Amino acid sequence: MLQYNIPQVIVDFLISDFNYSIKKNDKIDLCTFCRTYILVIPSHRRNDHILIMTQMELAWWDMKDNNGLGPYFQAMKIEEFCHHIFPMVPFLKHRRYRISQWTSSFKNFKRTVPTCGAMIFNENFSEILLVEDLYWKTWNFPRGKINDEELPFSCATREVFEETNLRISNHTRYSQISFLEMYYQQQLVRLYIIQEKGVSRQADTLQPNTTGEIRRVKWFAVDCLPKDLHPMVELFLDQFELNNSISSNGPDCRFSGDSISQCEALDCICKTDLQLQRESWCPRNKNAMPVPILSVHTTKWKDQDGP
Image 1 (spheres, helix red, strand yellow):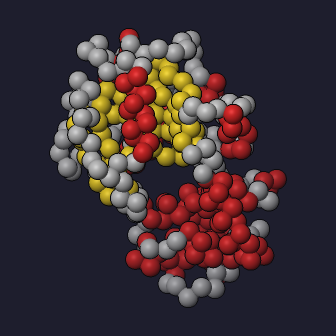
Image 2: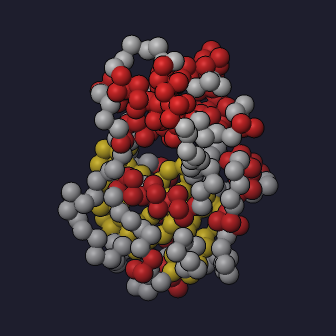
């Protein structure tokens, strides 16, 4: 995430220029979001509405997850949130008329952004951990969209912790890690295969760290999955079994596919432009691929940031 120190005089200017009828401490909180997420956008990229909306969404989620603002702000949609923030930002105040257009364009863009997450099994691969979406009320793998300049495994680690409170980055518990990739509705999805050992089943341990996103976190038997299952879950589980991954030896010695000597090309991408990052990740003939499965990989840990 972009981050710089913004002088207090700018924050004071923003507060004085904020004309919405909300209490003063809310003004200060909203200005904190501006300072953390919006004002850090480099001047040469302040016409990039996708980047602006990406940062705006990060601020919006931060407000919902970690801020003490009242219920009015907790229930606020991102478009309405933009109407509060744009007048506070000098390079956005004259673009308020574009909020609706940019919001719609950003929603379409997000459908193409790669996502990363994890298939988390118990020790003998008889159970899998799933999360229930608060809005759609379907069960799926913990996963989420990759951020600008974020490595795939870092994204998976962050999303799993946000949605389940588990930290899969504790590398000492795994000798190897594997992942599956496939396209689902033109969106590339990478899920790391995690074998969790000794995970607590207590409800107070498995709980989302986000607001307005995940309803429940629960273990399910692989042969007795819930009815309200996201179609993606069965696709990944079928491919997992197809590659003879479930066995008494675990996935580390039964995965087929390309060998990774250092790390996947995707894991080396550190571009600041998410559009370029996406293009570098995706195969050239994506639209010509009749089968969604891309690859199955196994890799050993190379450093403390993951494969």
